[in-house]
Image (tube, rainbow, N blue to C red):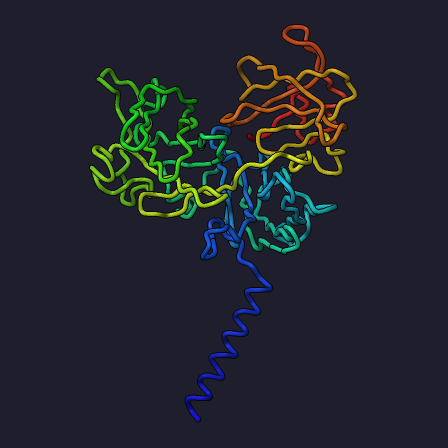
Length: 412
């Protein structure tokens, strides 16, 4: 009798668990079933400016996460998948410390860019649907900081520190990921001539590769063969007069970066001098993992964009500017518009060819070069070179418009 009661109780518990699983899927990146198919496909991503303009952070977040950024810049949030059919759509809601709504989506949307009016602590929730299956992200704490205030919460430091990774994707037979590495180990050399080094599967040594050098970090894009189990190693260095320059130390710190393999010659000779990660291709998905198998980033094969406007300006701005990955869309009455952009507030503009969007003729589209990252300043109008005339009346309808510089400004 006692044995039968235990069996019945176990069956009831099992049924309850199965019912709960059917109602609430845990959308966590990288989860998979026994066949290797990605079953938890929705991610909530964010991009923020830190207290200073040079500190940019992009990553995926889960319910209960905490993020921080400067009140001076937009906080960007978007759901993936953001391309293909269907895309993830949700209602974004932001509340302040008094539980007052400061933003709520008029209709389900793929992403938002929000600039807070004042510093404080806010809460974000996102509820949505992908292909008939609901998802939600709850109790995400947003710490909006005054300019110059730097958070000292150790939880803000990623395990990959001093490295941050973002924009992982595969294009054809090549994998790409954007890399940001802190210069803090050699901060006194922040103005030196910095570069990055890399090798693939212990060979293909490459050095003196270009970086975007900022006061506190360097930025560059890694590219390597999109072949399963490819192991790419990299580091940043500066020229100090010695052969090969002075490299950062992957094993440095009480808690070394999880991108460090943990041994001088594992998996290849001299691996102690590199940060490393492995590409894992699993059916239609791809992942970046550490040497020990910890998931870093994941993506699904890129597909053709079927609709414009996955992210960007909302209804209040008449969806003037839209974007999906590196493809950017804009509305204009000009029949043959031109588009130009630059990264940061200095430097020359690069011009891109604008074409009519084939799936929505209300928009023109341009393709920002893959690997571009930072604060993008852009304009559309007529003419090229010194004869370029920006369409200021149309541009000013966008929330990205910066009236002092007459540019549209957003993170990429």
